[in-house]
Amino acid sequence: MGHDHGPSTAATGGTATGGTLSGTYRRKLLWTIGISASITVIQVVGALLSGSLALLADAAHSLTDAVGVSLALGAITLAQRAPTPRRTFGFYRVEIFSAVLNALLLVAIFGWVLWSAIGRFSEPVEVKGGLMFAVAVGGLLANLVGLWLLRDAKEKSLNLRGAYLEVLGDALGSVAVIAGGLIILLTGWQAADPIASIVIGVLIVPRAYGLLRESVHVLLEATPQDVDLGEVRRHLLAQPGVRAVHDLHGWTVTSGMPVLTAHVVVTDAALASGYGDLLARLQRCVAGHFDVAHSTLQLEPEGHAEEGGALHI
Image (cartoon, rainbow, N blue to C red; front, top):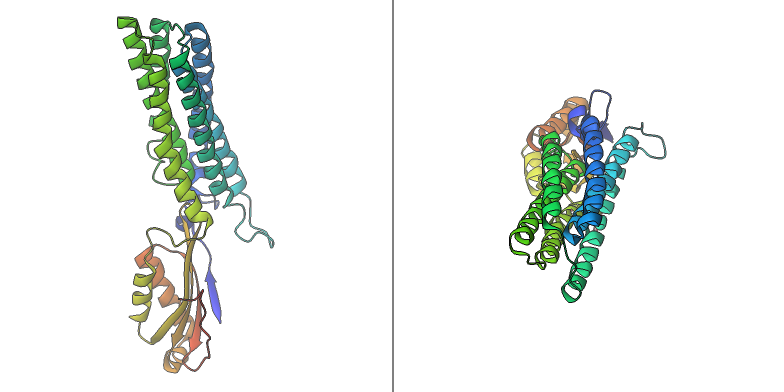
């Protein structure tokens, strides 16, 4: 015996039409893609004219921003598709795959930047510091606009957090390029350019690691970080008529959509007093205390035989 309380708008983080939280910010993501693409073109031209590796590295990072946010937008579009009998949760999980690919792109950019910068130390290239500085300032201003667009979104979705961190990292990279350009302009020290490139690469690593770690956590169907299953069990056991809780599992379908299942052993008297009322009370307990609106609870009488297993807690 069980009942599935479907995901509400709050649970999925979506709009009234059932979209995910990320879908709410589609227009802002489009603007961010346009800004990142424009920055990339300007930085590539500036890098070719100035000879700056740091600008080229920042351009590659900006391109990654545009690609990453485009992946996020594509995933969001797919996630809006209605569930089917074969895909009962629809395409929500595509958002998480997008976040993984985004993180891997960042790692690839870091490897390229580091390799190229090391080569510049052994074979220096003369860089025009003034042009490098001017282009980097323009890139920083554009990235600040992108950060403003996504300022409210970063805590709402893994995908949107990835997009925000991409733009933030690119803004910090622009600061590094500005510093390198100023040093070259004022002192003529050409090593400032590959050093600025390495700084940009180092800025990428913690963001890529954090995004990849959180994405893999979801893909492995680990317990949501803000849900304590021990507390869930204690709350359920504190409900009148509940004798035991087993086969308790929690995972995340996509950002803002935690799911919980459990077998709840109840007294015969509690079942006799009203199955529907008891089930509703238990689900309200889960939703109210742990913000898990999508729960499947199977009620069992005390005499129901159960065999434990390694996967059951």
